[in-house]
Each structure stands twice: as C-alpha cells, then as structure tokens.
View 1 (cartoon, helix red, strand yellow):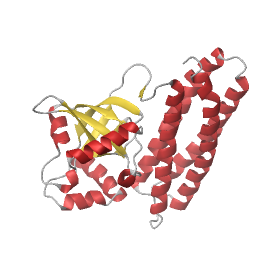
View 2 (cartoon, helix red, strand yellow):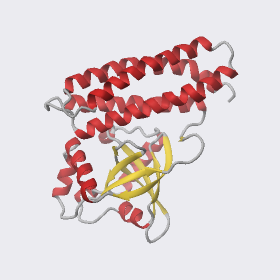
View 3 (spheres, helix red, strand yellow):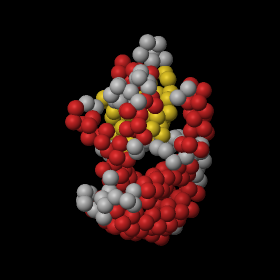
View 4 (cartoon, one colour):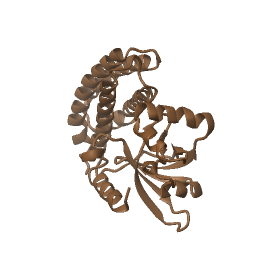
Length: 282
C-alpha cells in the first residue's frame, strides 16, 4: 500500500484505539513498528494478523502479491525485535519467520479463513512469508493505551466485544461447511483463553484490591464473581465444541450466542460498578 494511504490508516487507528471504518472496519489489524534494516530508524506499518494463541499472532508478508518483500519484512529479518500496537495493548515482540511444516500448516489455515491470501500468492513467484510475533513478557501490568484505569477496563472489554463479534460473523459466513475451519477454531480458543486470563486476574488482583479500598461493595463483587463462574462454564462448553475437528458449526454458533448474551450483560454491569471505583482517585 502507498505510504500516504498507510498513514491515513495509522492516524485513524491511533485516534480510535484500533477501530477503523470503511474497508478495514471488520479486519484484524495491528500497527507493526520495525527498525529499518539500513537506516536504523523506526517504521510503522498497518498489517493484518491472525490470532494464534500462546502469546503470539501471525502476520503474512504479502505486499498485495508484489514480487518484492515488503520493507517491514526485510526490516524484521535484520532486527527481529519489534513493537506491536493493537490499538489497546502495546508490547514488544520477537519476530520468527516460519518455515517447513509449520509454515505450511499456518498458511493452510490462513487461506482457509480468507481466500484473499491465496489470490496474493497467485500473483507472484515469491513465497509469501508467514511470521509469528511472540510477545516478550515483562514484569508488571500490560501496557494499555488508556488515560485512566476506568478507560482501560472499558477498552479491554471492547476488545472482547469486537473479537466475539468477528467470530460470530466468521461462523455465519461459513454456514456452507460441515465443520469449523481450522483458523476459526484457533480464533475461538484464543478468545476463550484471553477471557479466562482476564477474569482470573480480576478475581485474584483487581477485585480484592477494590473491595478493600471501598467498603460496602461486597454485594457487587459477589455478583461479579458468580457471573465469572457462569461465564467459565459457557467458555468451557465452547472450548469443548471447537476443539472437536468434526464439530457441527450450528452447535458452535449456538454456544457463541449463549456466551455473547451472558458476557455482554456481565461487561455492562461490571463497567457500571467498576469504572467509578477505578477512577475515584483520578
């Protein structure tokens, strides 16, 4: 994509915490900042990504099917440590180019999820590289692009809302198949793990801290924990279905709908209760 077009996407992405309009409104995009192979200066590029679980995402150096690798790919070959901005979360990552069977497996998933990748490959003799971005763990809480704790919790919730909406749409668009696609199953399992981790962090860290600081909130936190338990059951049901490669897509869609209804009600109540407490000291 031309640099001026890239800059428009970057500006909108940053202004709206990762939310885009138009062509990219339903795309999974991140901002990838690499170090120039020749200049040593940072370069930021919007790229599409695939969830992959286990603290990593996948990006494909397609360049729209051009015969030359994109600059960001050449940069990370020289400097594998990169910065990733999801719009809400910002972190450093280590870029690893996949090869052999690992590359073929992830490429097959990508093509199954979006035939556009195959169309790009058909345009060029260049084998389109698949790159795994492994988040580099660091101590302390995640770097969230928010101006207050209350905004942070809303933004994190919106990440779950948006990802679940994308999964629902992907399931609907795949109604013609008899089984779930491999990448769609990964998307679901990655979402489930992320939601589990988020709720575990709230139960063990955030809720006890806020309850101690704000006497009289016991009933609200009791309800939130009970909702976490109900949602955990729904998440386990969804995991069980999508882990079965022969799963009926209609059954999976029904589980996603059940989870969506319960989760949206929970997130709305949690925001109403937590945001005032989180921002009380600001």
